[in-house]
Amino acid sequence: MPANDIRIVDLDTYEPTDEEIVSWYALLTAPDQRMWNYDETEPCASTEPQKQVKAFTQWRSRSCGENHPLWAICEGRVVGMIGINRFKAAARRHCGEVGFGVIEAFTHRGIGHRLLYAAIEKARLLGLARLEADCFADNAASIALLHKCGFRDEGSRTGAIRKDGRLRDQRVFGFLL
Image 1: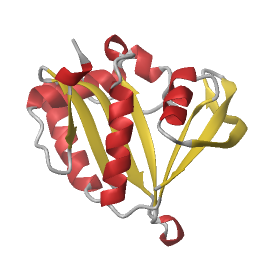
Image 2 (image 1 turned 180 degrees about the horizontal axis):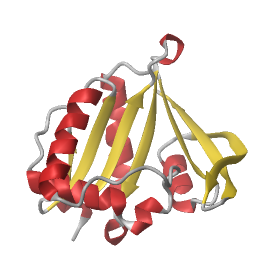
Image 3 (image 1 turned 135 degrees about the vertical axis):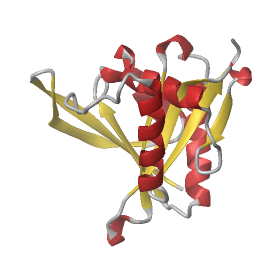
Image 4 (image 1 turned 30 degrees about the vertical axis):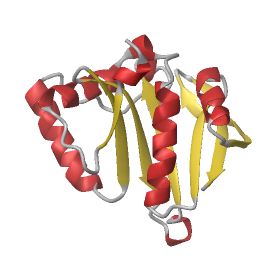
């Protein structure tokens, strides 16, 4: 399916269907996404669709104004996502951190690129002055995407993440809006 058949929606204004919510949980828990997740102890939502919809609704109401998710949707299924998490500390309120993922079957179609540019535009609308991102130092796809979209490499943190019983390095990126 061509990337132009995929629409980017802003969950600050878009009301997802139950099927889209369930597919979002499927994306979050897919092996190709979990391998890059920092927190291996993070609980997964129930596998029961009704409980997933309820959990999403509760999360959305709690994070309103602080977390700004955008989804890439293809034929009623979430195939990619990005979130802008606004920092709470007064000295950092001008900054947001992005986290993103695209389901493996939909990679290399420009979806990550479209999501990241949509997040940059959303950050500008929110009045942010800076976006930050980080990833494992061996995540070549994320590093390439961040560079392609104008993020600057700001360095690395050696052994910053403990994952799978070993210390892993983390790369840090910034983008001034």
